[in-house]
Length: 130
Image (tube, rainbow, N blue to C red; front, side, top):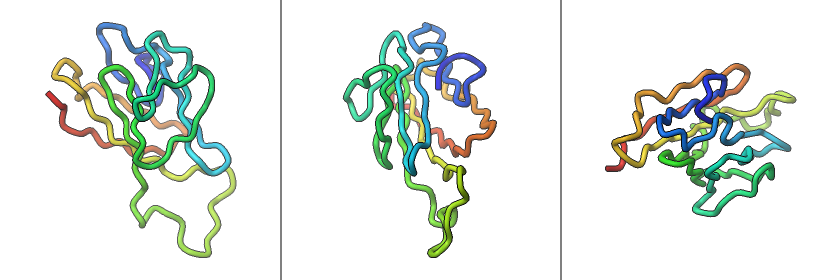
């Protein structure tokens, strides 16, 4: 997650307060994690600063703030969850649903880019808070 075009989630930032590779989300041991990648202005999880290069669990409902953006991980719809008795495919992360909200009119929410590659992420852009 960052402002560089090669990220899976690109957050536009003309003021360059968001680092090129600001944060990273990973699926480890059955849980999503978020990690600050030594960004210049930091990453917060539920209003607490993250320690750079130290992944922490990112649970449903928790909010990551990266400058003028808030990213909230939400539980996937039931239809996308594994059926009872079915095992998840080994090495395959479940779909991560992330609601993205801009915190001001200066953040161009139409310029949030997403290129999943091998990731399974659903993005939902919410109305800006002005």
